[in-house]
Length: 98
Image (cartoon, rainbow, N blue to C red; front, top):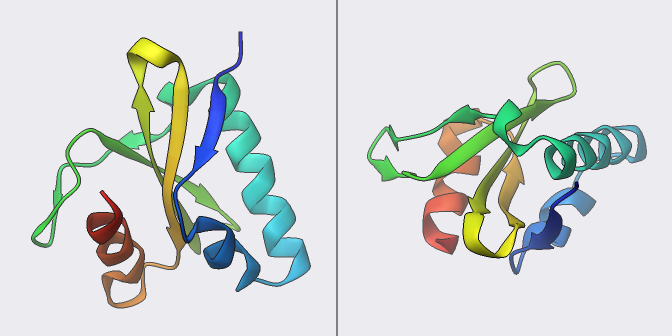
């Protein structure tokens, strides 16, 4: 069984900021998430950002993080943000989009 993937507003724009090969790596990881969402590490409170209920998955040798949450009762994976960890950028975006 695979989960339906939903991208929050702004995630497509996040992905388009990366080069083509990185975009393919991100999409490959999102595909893995749709099959086995429990693969990602649980996030809690990241430097003041409350990301409880969210998970992270890496792409491109841990240079890129995909922050997502599982919506159990509807079998949906909602990708909240995609980006680099630099200055906690990806977690800031994720926190604002929750």
